[in-house]
Image (cartoon, rainbow, N blue to C red; front, side, top):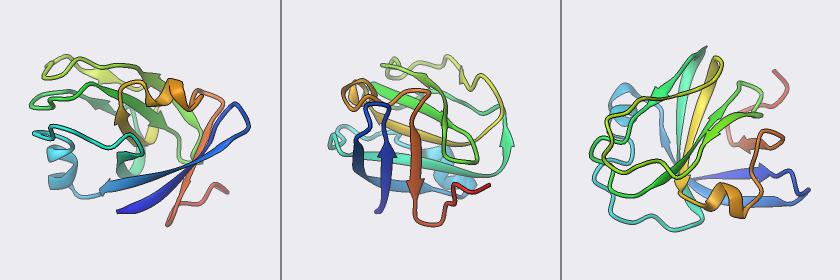
Length: 127
């Protein structure tokens, strides 16, 4: 696991353990078939370019908050409490570089919103 730091809108910083999905295979699998996830853990999907990314919940058994993140680490939009096993496409509102999936309710609990910024190893917020 890697570590991600959230600079939340309530001026607090939170440390999360994250699994990285950087390859096509890892991104396709995502959190499918996962039955539980610690509250302080998530999955970060990395892409090499900005795109209007979308996710779905096929074979995902736990509700998630899905955060769409710009190349500079700022949060673009959030889909809260997504429906497990749904085939509905959940899309970013603008081209983004990253997607962070957390347990449903974590984004609200930690005051993560469009004024928040994420930072992790290998990612620079100076783009």
